Length: 287
Image 1 (tube, rainbow, N blue to C red):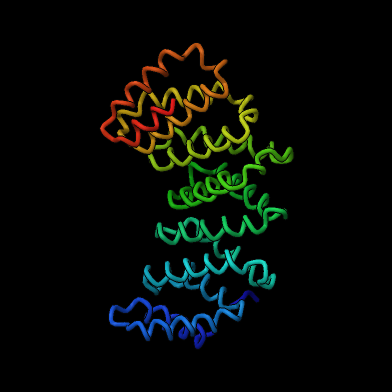
Image 2 (image 1 turned 135 degrees about the vertical axis):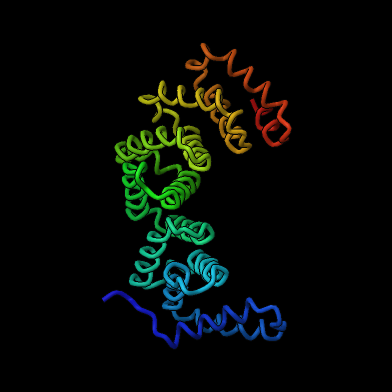
């Protein structure tokens, strides 16, 4: 039977979070609450309660659930390696189940917890299995709920940012091929946030290991040029910045494939330097 919270302990933990959130809680009371939380934290099972509140306790307010998520992330960062295996597995399971939560703040907390765990597990097969699971789920990206797709990309983006060495493992090649195809398809997504996340992941992989793009370079270039041509109609600052990063990296690392399009690329950067948003202009100036 899987782990279940006891009503008494769950009520105790929730009461402390409610007191912490109350506007009339005094400094002295906050100190007492802190001491009580520290006492609870001596038992690793406390982290199961945090995961349960964040992921499963739909009757609780978003604020309390996010508080539990932040506390869980802090504990995982500081103490994960000392957790019993059964606690580790419960947190892993719950965080993975909740990366597609409809509440964005809970989705972000769950994604962050998974990425912190990936850091602790980087020398085991767990992180590779996590990436494989998430990438394989993108085979059905067209039928995924938007929140699930967003959470999946959030985790993959963070993993690609923090663990670039994973990309260079030979056994990851088949997974990368699936990921490339999914991300290239998502560059035309109707939701601009999905498009931006997909491009951000591609940018991270290209900068870390440009050679893995050799087999998809022509399609990748077509996709970037298409986005650049239509970025004004999207009128999204973050999308334009990611396009600038893509084109800058391509010109810096693979100028040979960019030569024929260089005039149009230069014109795009000139246009971006005149953007009202100075962060886009600054990104364009990096070219």
